[in-house]
Length: 176
Image 1 (cartoon, rainbow, N blue to C red):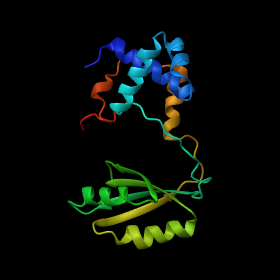
Image 2 (tube, one colour):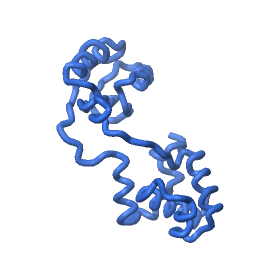
Image 3 (cartoon, helix red, strand yellow):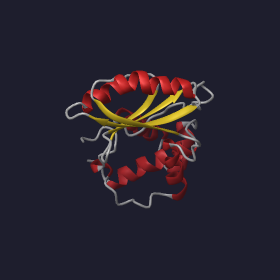
Image 4 (cartoon, rainbow, N blue to C red):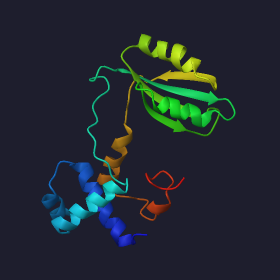
């Protein structure tokens, strides 16, 4: 397990990358007080361990899929994992969550039109074996995206600095 000092150095690198992911390792090293080689190795390790990802995130609307919909799905007993796998393999579905509450799964999809979403919901999702109930919720406006939470932390600092990142079940690569 990494030391608190090492974790904080990694977090400072990530905070800087969230502010400007295109900056050079030399510029990043100057900001966090480490050598360029140390920053490069830390970034490579964070990526390899799944703690950091680099991605281009286009607007779904710009890419021709402006209809953003959440599907709440109640699965039949024993069918949840199979449904999660099927949903994860569908190109319209961007996120699949196994959740608690009335529904077992929440899937998030992006569609070219409300008619395309309706066909998906009624003809594909509705015909999947193991779906007991489903509801759709169309998103009217996105006030904040998942990746944007990191910008807030980068700007304000980590108020929860006492959290043990190694024990967080939501951390990529952590055992759940």
